[in-house]
Image (tube, rainbow, N blue to C red; front, side, top):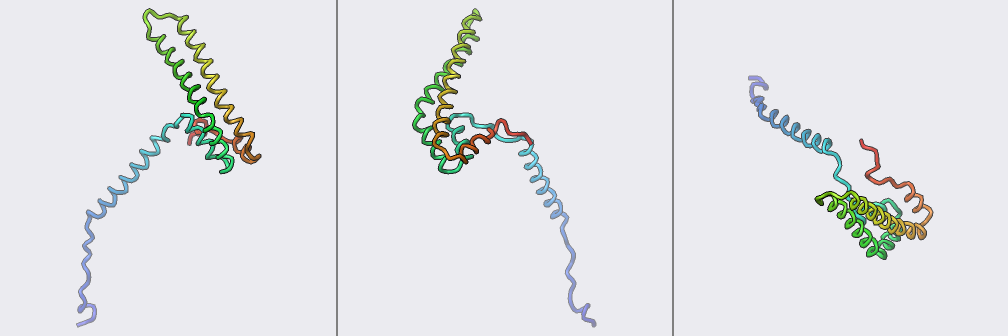
Length: 155
């Protein structure tokens, strides 16, 4: 009796179901990756606090704190200006729904909305300008190079 005959050889019972499970898992993960890629990025939060936070995240920490502090000091004025703008936008919607339709009322509402938007923009820009005056040259440079997510190139 030889040595090879004395030891039992392991049986090669590689189940085929293991191959199918592996293939199924690979297809599952590829499907998830493809769905995430096709879906694209989540919508950008365009609220004032989110905008300020995105700007602050792009700055050195000391300059970010200055921007946040300036925003905090002017938060009430910004919220009021934004509320005025939203209410003005609602007057446009209301004029469109009104029967009989009055084009002059809509033009007037649009004029008020432009003025409210300009006041809101001016208030927000004043916050950024006041904070920039306190920032380091590096912080102002990074602020100048900042690109909002809505303007970044799509993959």
